[in-house]
Every structure is written in C-alpha cells, then in structure tokens.
Image 1 (cartoon, rainbow, N blue to C red):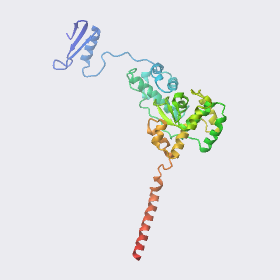
Image 2: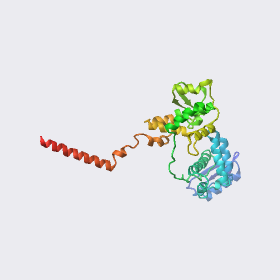
Image 3: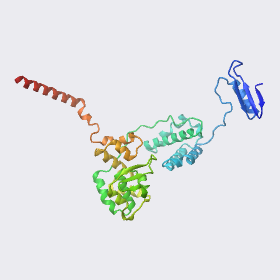
Length: 345
C-alpha cells in the first residue's frame, strides 16, 4: 500500500509512472490529505494541476483597496489622493469581484472614463489601478495576474507647461510685500527662486534654513536635496521674527496668482516651479544641474524643458539641405574666385 502511518504523520510513497518512474514521497497530518494527494499524483502524473486547491477568492475590489490603504498607503507620498482615486474607480466599476476582472471586462472602462474626465486624468486612473494589483501580487495578497497590465496608456499630445513672463514676475514681486498673509508671500518667493514644489517649501523647518541654502526633506522622491539661495531670500524668510513652520495656504496662493496675473483657468502653484525651470534653461542653464535642483529622479522629466534652451537643436538651421546647398555653392564660388586670382600671378 502506498499510504502508511509513520509516527504522527501519514506517508505517501508512490511511483505514478510505474516501478521505473520517479518516486514521490510526501507526509501529511491527516489520512484524507494523503489520500487526495495520492489520487492526484496517479491521475495527473503529466498534468500540472493543484492537488489541494485553494477556495475561490471572492473578495471584492473594495476589500483589496482596504488592504492597500492600511498597509501601503501610509508609506507613499499623497497616499490619501491615490486612495480617493481607487475608491472612485471602484464605484465606477460597481465594486466587482476582483478575480473576475479580466482585461476584456475592463478594457472599455477608460473609454467611458474619458466622457467625464481628461485623457491625462484617465491615464492616471489606469496607472493607479495597475499599481494596486501589482502591489497586491507582489505582497502575496492575490495569486492571479494583474488584469490591468495589458491596458495601455492613451496617447495624447504633450501638454503645454505655461510659465510666468518677466513682466508677470515683476508684477508679482511688486505686489507680494503688500499681501496680508506673510506665509503666502514668502512661500511664493521660495518656489520662484528655488524651483521647489509648494509642499516641499511649506514643509521647511527652521533647522533646514541656512544663510546660503535651503534643505528640502519632504520631497516626492523621498530624497533630501539642498538648493542654494541668496542672503536676501534668507533674510526675508526669517524677517519680522518669523519662524517656520508655515501654515497651509496653497489655496490662497492659487487664488492670488489667478486673480493678479489673469492666468489660464486651472493654473496651480506648480506654475512657480515651471517658471523657475523655464527661465533657468532659457538663460543657458545646464540641464543636468536643473535635474539636481528640481530633484527629478529621471533626466527624461527634466528634458521637458530642453526645447527652451537658446541653442536647442540650432543645427537645424545650419544642417538642413537648403542651408547645406547654399554653403556648398558659396564654397565652390570661393574656390573658383581663388583659382582665378591665382592664375593672374
């Protein structure tokens, strides 16, 4: 008999392919498990089917989002924002049984989403759902493949990144000293002069402010970076006995920018960061230096500003076929003139 009692275990000793085949030995706590395993090995010697299948995973998407929110959400920047996005997606999909979400079942959702949201927003939503399943799979909370993995981003034209002109910057700087809220005025100056994100500037503490630099620690990439500043900005930050922490005032700053400068609808304080980067490149600043100042983890992010460089792709005016033809003609004419002059001597 291939099943026998051995101490407190039940031993399975079987050769499913005959005496010359591979020998399989396993031990189990109960005889029922041993019997199921023996039957599986004999009946499915060539197939790869589980002998002790798990019960079906009937958890709904909302339950998996709850697991993600408890374990992973506190560890990432703006976790609350992504939690809100995932819950909205869950409502749009009517909270389905997660394991029943197939690529085919979910492929129509981005198209429906675009009826009420921008393409960029839809792409961000798809990425958020994709990241959720990737994390669940990586941590062992699910054992099936990511149903969103094959859903591709919707291609769209690169968005224009507006920035403030010199006149707008001048008007803003002239108004700031009269603004009733000191924190708004100072944070705008910090973002304009360092390219910091509003959240990074707002999180500054007194010990991170030095006469020649600011040290940003609450960054998107989780990496600390130092950005040089001049003495004027240092004195302004600590003027009138002021000491950080700054109060939360992004809404007030956004309202100020939109009302004072008549900016396009939807502009946020992030335009201050774009303004720093754009003018830095237009003035001939090095793109790698800009990457370190802005704290971009990838140079591709910084290259979005490369087209503003004064010498960006200037070879196009010199090396296009028309210019090359004219240069060739000029060269040939100079050779002929030189030869003609040489013959006279």
